[in-house]
Image (tube, rainbow, N blue to C red; front, side, top):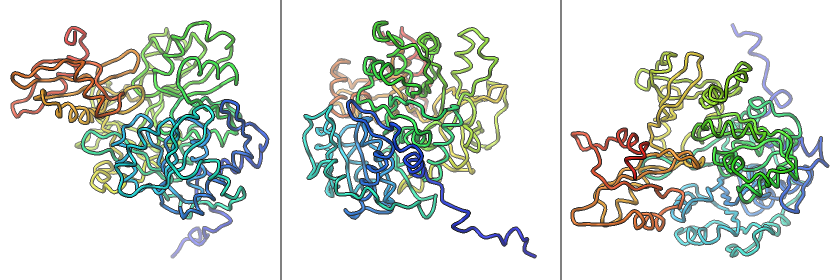
Length: 543
């Protein structure tokens, strides 16, 4: 017999698909005249920002862009980048934010693989975009973004952004997705083999992670958020949608440098910001004169390599309270957090830094984060010594990898998302990373594939063998360290290899250190990267 509970229908009155797009609609309705976006002399209220997003959606729709079409954007943290987070999915399309540090070949691959129908491009990146477009057989519609702060960029498209917006209807009747499982964004992540993988995320996960950000941080209404975290990185960890839900102020920033950051903090009364350790290092090490006049406290989230004690202590001294978060593109950015305990505040700075440097526990709206033995899929003991792999499960997890069923199946083996990060579980249940099984190097918050760098080095005629590992770096957290064996009779200098790498890849991926020596291998010829990591940590080995 059917239960009477089963006879209660889901209908339009009691169910709506979750999407973060509703946050800006509410902000414009409830707080139409509150300031929403600041960029130089530009000021937009929530009503104006919502109107601009609807114009963008309408203009895209009139050009034939619809459900599951990809719209790519390459820009710094400027208003059009923020508007794209809403305007693109409002017409049913999928937002693909491009890493501004990539080279032309990598960008061309992503545009081709993602099938971008439209590309919004900031003039600052016109040289690399022009080169990328030249590599494509099928080119997207190119729209040039306007920014008074960068007027000299070469125009590559047939129309400019403001002209394009004027084509759109400010009252465009967008609708929630029919299914909250519909794709909202496509982000490419650095892998260790082959081309990068396209991470597809959904409206439900974006909605929940945006709210999880609020709960995770105890974020109040009307925050003043400084965009130091790139919006291209995991869609700014979903903070474009979070700030709309909180009716806050988005303080845009083209350059993540000490003076612009401190000027913005002082002028606008910034209350919240996110970034890699290097962002906070810039503020800590800035001349005291640049910090003059800033007396309020700031909440900061930090991710990437665990923040060293010097960063934690320095941030405290200049009025920034750091929260360490952990995640990957596949889990919308931070899905783990080092949730603080009141008792930690009584510890000396070394103790607080140790506690706050852990990857922590799941965020409020993620179902689970744990450390499992990747073979048995059983939890490791809470002994702080037994290593396993960090795994996630829940709504704040990607749909899968675009057009890559094998990688998707591997990532979700056993009903968990496998991060590839090796870790231990501490006696209090908090997770601490010990190593990265994928050999991905996290430099300044950006992922670098060691194999990509190795493949470039192998292309040099003097190189016989190459292996790249992470080397600790005070400024960037980690940088690539390359161990190189030369062919008999060949010679090349570190400077020459660095120049060669810069010709074939983005500058941030180029090894900071080159070590010329025999590379340790197993009896089967496999490179022993664990031994190289130890050498990279030793200053004596890399003089």
